[in-house]
Length: 400
Ligand SMILES: Cc1ncc(COP(=O)(O)O)c(C=O)c1O
Image 1 (cartoon, protein in one colour):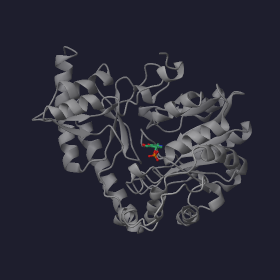
Image 2 (cartoon, helix red, strand yellow; image 1 turned 30 degrees about the vertical axis):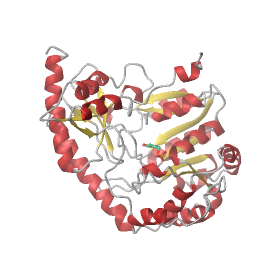
Image 3 (cartoon, helix red, strand yellow; image 1 turned 90 degrees about the vertical axis):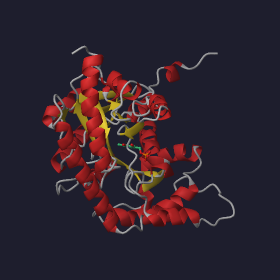
Image 4 (cartoon, protein in one colour; image 1 turned 180 degrees about the vertical axis):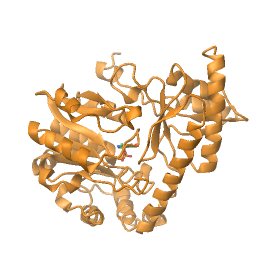
């Protein structure tokens, strides 16, 4: 029987599609260090787990499509800590930041409309765009420029009648770039000039390093009507499996229309929203400690990778990813080789090949995304595997 052309053309996520090879490696007794996925090993705050254990409703009922009122009322207090003025009515609770991105695309774009995005980008955005039949129009950011914002004229050149929005992610997955206040302002002015929206995915808001201050798009109140902020509890409180996020906007029309999508999916998960309320009561010291831990890991893995012959590393300033360029021909083949044909004393690594983090054909072929979500002891072992794996791949596969 026939499957849709849409689903046949859908990508298998480069973050997950090599998982069967990883499972085979584990079956062979090989330990796999997972640097492919942003699944932190950081403990979820204990009160989140307690809130789930103490959930005492006799029926797990449907809730409001907008989200649990208690959560919508607690979130503005969280934003207030950062000096951001968000009201509960500006918030639509979503099933993860993923759903917020999908709602934003569906709300702003018709089929074949366009969203302009710096590449490399969070690869699942391509899948969300594909589902909404939206075309991603890339502006390439370059490793040698620290993946900073390309010249604003590059964005302007790409704006057409079909452009619905520009989408940014800050701190960025996969590059680790944190957009400056000035970069955000330039983009907002451009959006204003062409009357389009700016969507900013801030799910890594707290993870900024080197003492750098993070600028949230929500702080630009004079442009608030054309701003959509995507948020999530997943990484902040290491509760990725809870699937709670938010679409935040001061634009009432956006929220009214997005609510229709929210009503169709009925409500976000109830128990998890109760857990999210508990997460918001977490002491600020938790996030400070988590940030320091990631910064330590960032320093460690960047240094370890830079010592490997032929490896170039971006300049990550936030989130918990980096893009590394490897002295190889094809990152997908290398990543597969690492899982299928290689181990160092019974250990190997899984990385995410970067080609599908780009729209532009051919870019990212020698790049991998590394998520530094493991402790430094494991990162040291993983870096040793990458070094030995590169030597083995270059000699066995590339014949060098
Ligand atoms: C940039 C970015 N946005 C959104 C998401 C989706 O997060 P959630 O778990 O909230 O759906 C991720 C997950 O890795 C991400 O990296």
